[in-house]
Length: 246
Image 1 (cartoon, rainbow, N blue to C red):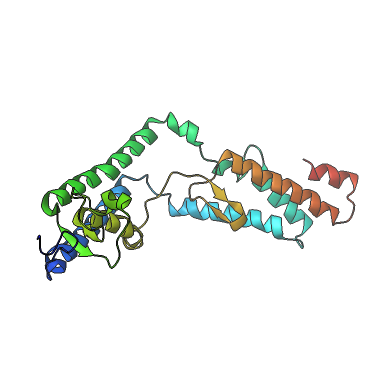
Image 2: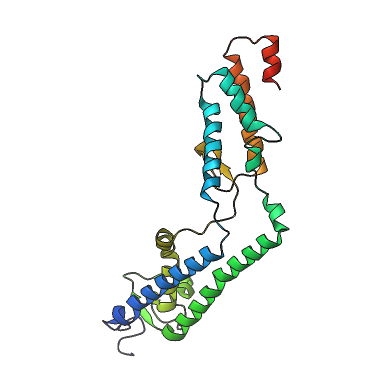
């Protein structure tokens, strides 16, 4: 070691067979199992019938907002059906706000379970890698990192004289852990979140509904569209005007 110096550590040519490949396979398998557990702990998915009902309501809303050549009677009927303050279709799709969910014991229990199942397996995996691969250098980079990044590149090795171009197994684990997340999401499926937001400009409501704020925004857009629509049609009679404003 003295002849080679600590900046030239010889690596086993077969290290990719007994360290790199098993480590990658282990981390990827762990990610798949963890994703299945998170999906199992996640909130139950919205039934397909409800999702279709939400999508149909949003299509009707976009039709009113973007259509210029709509029959007047049809416009009034659709507008009332969607915006009625008591039984309107949009009113029935409002979901509780996040503040209301805080006081829901079921929501809190599911959130806590999901968080625990998210970080406990990671802690166990770090301990496993640290126990079996601690102090193992898996490969050498063609360039060296600044010394301030040594704790990130050489986790598990506390020797400052080693070149920062060497990467330890524990540091490599964290790199693969974040890199494999998109592939696991693609293979298994993404864990749903608890957001009820809506991107109405793109026509992508949540599969569970939308928030009170989004509801008010849509109602306001429909109200403006109604005013604009009736500016482009013939002046109404007194009876028609009363009917429109009911």
